[in-house]
Image 1: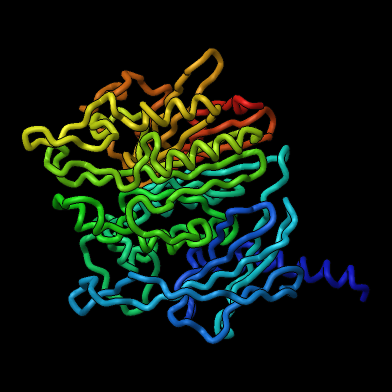
Image 2 (image 1 turned 60 degrees about the vertical axis):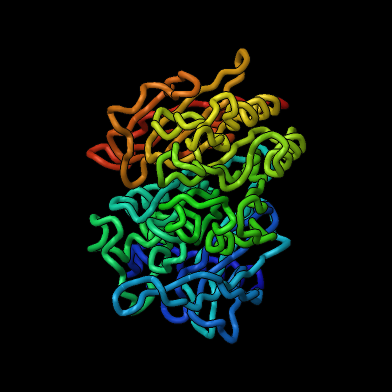
Amino acid sequence: MGRRLYLALLAAAAALALLPGLGWGAYPVNEAPFYTQPYLVSPTPHHSMYIIWFTSTPTTESYVEFGPGYGTRVRAATYEIEGFKTTDAQGRYTVPLPVYQQIVHLKGLKPGARYYYRAVSDGVATMGYDFRTAPNPGRPVKFVLLSDLQMKAQVPETVRLAGQQEVDFIIYNGDFGSRNPERSGEWFTVPGQVFPADVNPASTDEIDTHRWFNVMQQWGDGCRLLQYVPIYPTPGNHEIDDQSLLRTPVEGRDRMTMKIYLQLFRPLYPEQEYGPNGRHWYAVDFGDVHLISLSIFRWFAYPAATPPGWYLFDDIQAGSPQYQWLEHDLKTAKNQKYIWITQHWHTLNRGWDVAVPFTDPVIVDGVATYPAENDYLLRDLLPLMEKYGVNAVSYGHSHVYERYEWEYAPGRVIHFIEAASIGNNYRSATDPPASPNTGLIPAFEENRFRSIMVVEVNRGHGMSAQGIQASGDQIGRVFDEFSVAPSLWR
């Protein structure tokens, strides 16, 4: 048998292993020592990919086999995750849980190429998966927006629909779990763990299908999620490790950390700076898309007027490290055709919480106040986005579907998108009809059903986006669509 035919047969066998309908279920069954199936991230997706998974032991040997017939082996680096906890006999999350992160970095890959792989730890192999590297500029790219899963009752079905859209990557706009990131049971199944009944009541009967990795690693029937495409996340208020710190006012931000989130996506945050004002932002080029992930959120579990007020976790005002980084990044990204920003907190939204300007509080006569003229998102970030031709900003937090069109010059529009109606909806009939700080009403709003948003680049004309219905009797229906003009610099 010739070498070329032999390699072709091996590749075909690997592809066959990826086909649905071979007796596998919708959710991965993780055999020890695996806590999760592999997931993908990459700051340089045209030429490299990080393959990551969690194990219950440090393992004596972990690696990835990839290529035709899994003929190339790359050894994993192992990190012990700080902060995960499991339950005691009463179901309280107080017991430290050893969790080990296995990371393999595949380098020297070709743009727009498909690679087959599987992960192996202590002789146990996952099923076979594949991924495609980012294409060169000018080629089609497709991605989906997700956020705020939080173990809500209907997220498995919605995310499964997202996984069936044949996308190249996932943008996740923050808020992963329901309670504390330290609670391992919100992320993956721990054998023998007693899960307390204080999560969303509608999901407790089927809790195993609502853990974040279990939801995001569904497969079969054309569903391709974290094992197949890289995810690009941004942190939200639910990523603070100890959420009890949000329930009572605290002086300053020093006690708050984002250890679990930052370790989860370690290749995107190599500095691993857990506390406030660490480097919690990054940028990635994917085809013609320049994607920027910012850290924009605050804690707010007590009344806004209660001192010390709703402080920001990471500063974003002009002159702050994050702002300076963003300005430099936008300058260097001016040749990219499209610029997309992901953040958690909303710039424009008609909910009441956005009526508290996104600024540091000022204490006046024992009351925390928020001068509207100091709203950092409107005063500082919006002019920067206008200057460098940002095309779109997506966010989560309110669990709604809203889309705004901010026209700052003739023919120049920034699209602000909250496509976060994933598992439930928080819109109230008493919410103000317009974004309180600007008076701007949504160009489109739809909150009667769950939904996702899918964005396509270079398929036809430019960039186009679609809101897709994910519940009710018209699942898959496109209920909103719009197009995005190229960056100001092009």
